[in-house]
Amino acid sequence: MIKIYGMSTCPDCVNIEEQVKGDSRFEMIDIGQHVRNMKEFMRLRDNSTVFDEAKKYGYIGIPCFVLEDGTITLSPEDAGLQSLSEYSSESVSCNIDGSGC
View 1 (cartoon, rainbow, N blue to C red):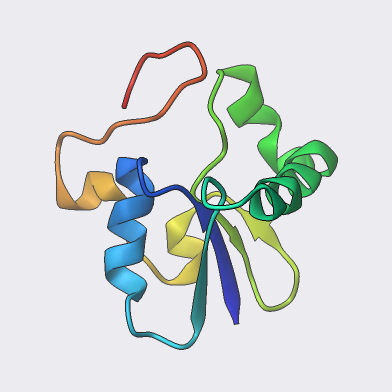
View 2 (view 1 turned 180 degrees about the vertical axis):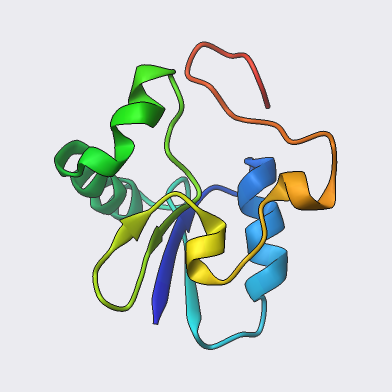
């Protein structure tokens, strides 16, 4: 099963959730729903170099995908899904500094 970390207030995450709804190959984990989910995500973010680029630009790093083999990626395509930008020219990134979203 592919785990997907995201938030219901993130447009990119909502796009991903719509694609996986009802598909048992995916588990959506809303990091804003419970502190346990946030801690789980933060452990990944704090210990994986996959997030280095996201952190450099102030991005949270969601949606985040943990593939069945344990690979962590920020690319929906790696999980067989499509990015918001493929659906719309209005792709938005949620930044820590308040830009985006």
